[in-house]
Image: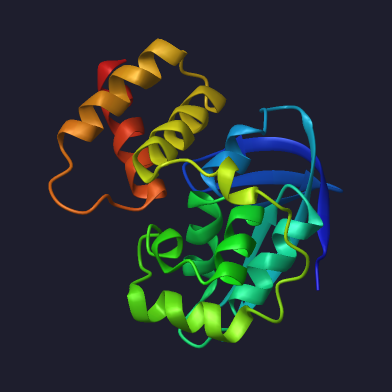
Length: 200
């Protein structure tokens, strides 16, 4: 297993970054918040989890070992794959997820695109005894879903080189186009990048 990568960031996209390690560029899938913390040409270290499938090898990256561990534990739940586990961490900080599981808070988990009431209940049932220590008051650090996606998309756009004002304009345009449930954050980030690309 590749537990971590450290090297120069050579590319940052909507869903992944490329980190060059020993002359080899490794594509690492990350949440928008993690991508926003990276800078082109700067050194970076990411804790990683390698997902092996018959037809692919996919590397997921995280800012620390604790977030990676939660990503891996979430996938022990039936019906939860790497995409859903990453979506959980894109919407909520790890301590908010742990607190929601420990307290049986279904509503917090169903804010994640792709997780319905039954899925949230299954996560709580199967992980309540596996999630490790919970920081008291962690739920207080959570943010409403609407603010969560806006903040993460803004961080992602600024990290990719646009100004905060350009990011805010794109976010407003994307928000106006939402009809029904809020799409996953990576999809919203892609929409904003398309809008800004046309404006250039």
